[in-house]
Length: 119
Image 1 (cartoon, one colour):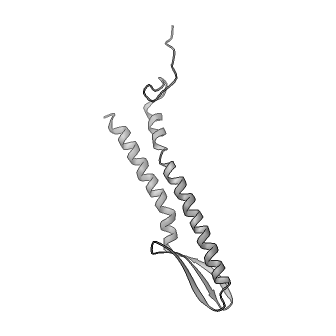
Image 2 (tube, helix red, strand yellow):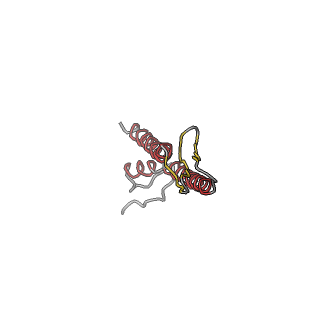
Image 3 (spheres, one colour):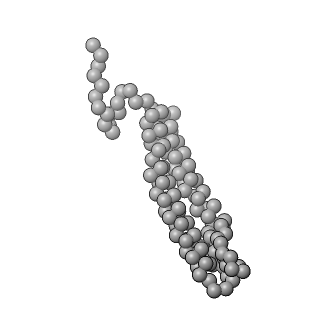
């Protein structure tokens, strides 16, 4: 007669779950860090874009209207000869890449810790 499989608990994982599945489940935890950071970054970029373009549109003359974050040039609104627009600064790239790098490092740490116990 086969042995019954009890429901899994943190102290007693299910018999059919492999180590790879556990590592994968732990490896997805960095998404809890990355997704909220991306929501914040996209929200900030949207707010900065609207602010810079509105200020450039409402300008009486020519001008430049920078938007920075921690000293990084993120966006730059401009008004020139009756035209207006927004230039993207290098800080935008940093803001978009940083959460992905943090998530990759956190995922690597989680996986390395899980595999460290098996060796």
